[in-house]
Length: 407
Image (cartoon, rainbow, N blue to C red; front, side, top):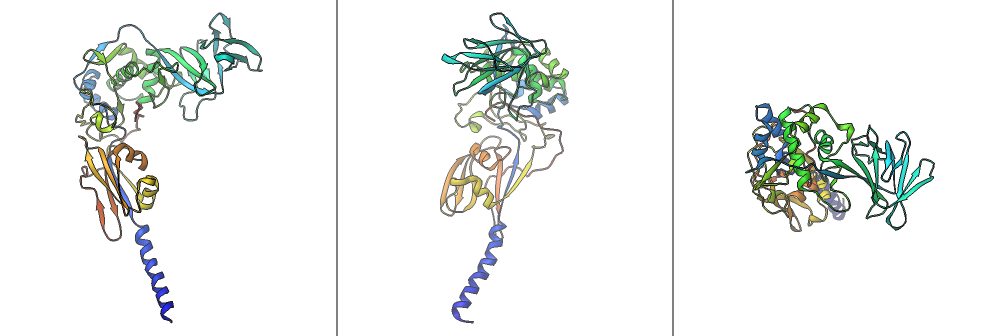
């Protein structure tokens, strides 16, 4: 064999040995919790309720220094159901101004000239053009908006009054103007399993009511989204006797700090401790009622402890341009009280990049920012220097959505 051929064969053999070692390199993420970690842990609330705590005690635990107060006058909430080129609806009884409609028939609302709204029959015949918003009263079974989004868990039936108005991005928006208590009848079962203990459901009802009041948008014609950007709103289809009872038993109750309703963030699973708001929402100011507290009873959650594994190449693809060169390690720079990751560093062969904990969670598809990172290679193990407690694997029922945004 010639010297040149010998050198070529040696190089090929070296690559053959190196490739498996590189391909076998894995990122192991061991973590705790599910959600943003701020405010009330829903599994923790269930644990407190199972041990005899009432909803007032549960809420006082998670929202430091707060109390329950009466809201006072009845409120109306405007919920954005969908935005589309046209809104197809049934169950309509009448249009504001006196025109009677047939609840068994299908109607279509489209954008008209000069910001008006045109209502058409199923055949396309124009029934009238109205100044926005066009207000449509539903029949006894509520109105139904057809063609809902694929991830909508409702059947499109809602209480209240349907408002149609031109959308800022074109087309028209369907908005449900509904009384606050009826709104909650569709929210509570969308956010927490209806079979959970009554006091946990009551805590959820009060938290959801307070969140709706404290985060009212009052812009673009609506106050709340119907999904996790605000709270999951399932409409009539989601209503359950147990959650209806929780709403009724707490009618008008809100959580206040200094006499004012607060933003009552909630989420699924804490992993054993909640977090300060400024450590999870990095643009948020500290809030005395949203501080880290021990959460001893959420171990039934399937996300109380978890492990996620991926190849180093997969992790690098997910992190994208944040990696300089080839990914070598993820190093935690700062943890919060829980200890969720506040700041971390992406270590590559070509340099280092700073990243926030929430960004890291989003990029890697993690359940929570409470996490440690270990790189396993054929030659060595590289890990961050501030790992949480060693995980354990509990059994659990289904996970609630924990829908208050940001998640």
